[in-house]
Image (cartoon, rainbow, N blue to C red; front, side):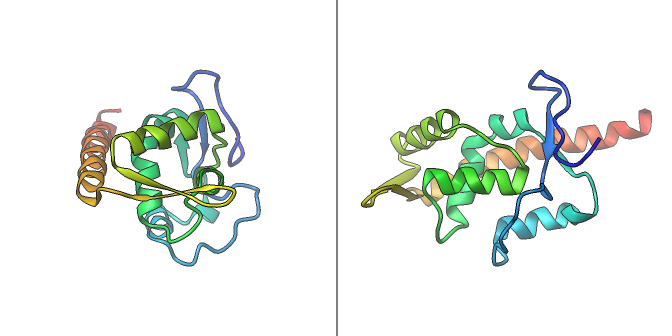
Length: 153
């Protein structure tokens, strides 16, 4: 299997490269997300993958984190490009934009209409932080359980 190759057809079976896809990737300038991803392992050295279904399942929190940690490119297309760069996952506008609008309707994001695009920013930092923190705790609990079960396998 090569980096970025899709495996399986069901949501639970699909895996895509976390980073290190075959696209040109501009230097992110040391963003917090890049630092976190680098701590998982150097993406250029291996096959670090994340299931596409997991990214989609946590898309709201991922979008919040991306917007909170970015000073630019917080419009939908830029966010989709960043998802592709970070996770090697090409999500459709029909997946991403409704999530952005829902987060805006929940007052977690604020939308700024520009001439030809809409930029997003965090509207309620406390609620956004709480939401991401809950997701982290849930994912960590599952990860710790799975890590502990490796000895039994």
